[in-house]
Length: 176
Image (tube, rainbow, N blue to C red):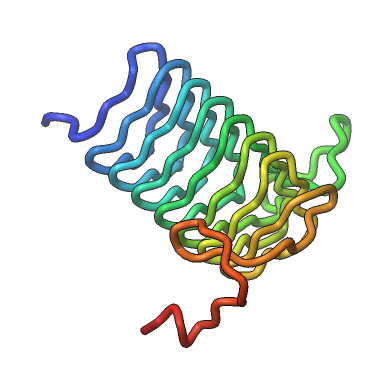
């Protein structure tokens, strides 16, 4: 059976992995068991997708991003270079909690996370939200919101294309 996706020869794909048609996995990536990657995604150099991570369709994950167990990306999510996800609020090398105690992180449809941003586990990034480069997200980010800073604070609103807008976009406006 012909593969309908591309994996660079320097990358490793463990068993029990689903990869959608049209997806491209570039140099030095590791896709771990149980991961599910949608259609038409692009994973840049040195991306690690841990066990049981879910990536929707048409996601773009730039170089040096690690998606740890407990992370779910919905369709159309952008992860900028070297952005960071966590899955344990109180890690200890000598006292591991096990994967059943990892905190879940959900990045909803169309959201963008800037380069070197950190997403602390247990939070949701809303639909089409934008996290600025270098921001540290320590709480949920609402739909269509731009956050920046350490810790990340709301700086304004954006539309589906990422343009700053002067008023908050509501559910009624986005569903029409």
